[in-house]
Amino acid sequence: QEPKQPIVRGAFIVMEGLDRAGKTTQVEKLANALYESGRNVETMRFPDRTSPIGMMISNYLQSKSEMDDHVVHLLFSANRWEKVKHINDTLAKGCTIICDRYYYSGMVYSAAKRNPNLSIDWARAPEVGLPRPDMVVFLSLSTEEAAKRGGFGDEKYETSEMQKNVRENFVALKDIPADEGQDLQVIDAGGSVEEVGKAIWSQVVQRVEEVEQGDFCES
Ligand code: T5A
Ligand code: NA
Image (cartoon, rainbow, N blue to C red):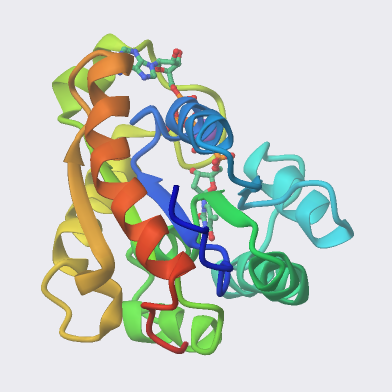
């Protein structure tokens, strides 16, 4: 057997998509598969509701508090910035991170409020400089398929108007010539949990191997 090359660093993989696309389900599945392939792997999610900033976000999403659109946007962003050292340290020790939502959600949801003073460019600014993912899996699900997965929950953004705008913004992100759109790998999330899991695995495992061998962009 070939001697194993030392791992340069772990891969940073993000799962994105609309509400009910299956992100949390697939993050778990992918993390288990990577673990079974002999890797160190950690899952993360944003918002991380456990920190003081995350608790403020959680209260807002549950309509227990009100906040200006800009304020809550900056809190979502700060909630990522407070994790930067942990992300970098984890990747540096060779551990792969699978992350449930990241700054793509951050930009797209805030801009979906259609506040004339909160453009997608305004929303992007505080995210600039965060660790760039090695791959972003975008789970794409039609409105009809999403509806089959049960009604809306009772959090702030779970309305058909908001979800429609979010979908439009995610589509538009694909056309932005900056890194955001080009990072997105669209995967059809309409199949069974097994089918979607297989499609994700075939794309992600290859990228994880490349990163482990040192083939990645400096962010
Ligand atoms: N937000 C987030 C911002 O505004 N700014 C930000 O910066 C960030 C990070 C909370 C909200 O915050 C916003 C976005 C959100 O509105 P959250 O806590 O992550 O974000 O909550 P959600 O992502 O909305 O969680 P959901 O549970 O709605 O969506 P998931 O994770 O995509 O879906 P999942 O896996 O939980 O599955 C949903 C249901 O579908 C079933 C599951 O069993 C479950 O019942 N399911 C399937 N059914 C059939 N076939 C499949 N293939 C299925 N896969 C899953
Ligand atoms: Na989720």
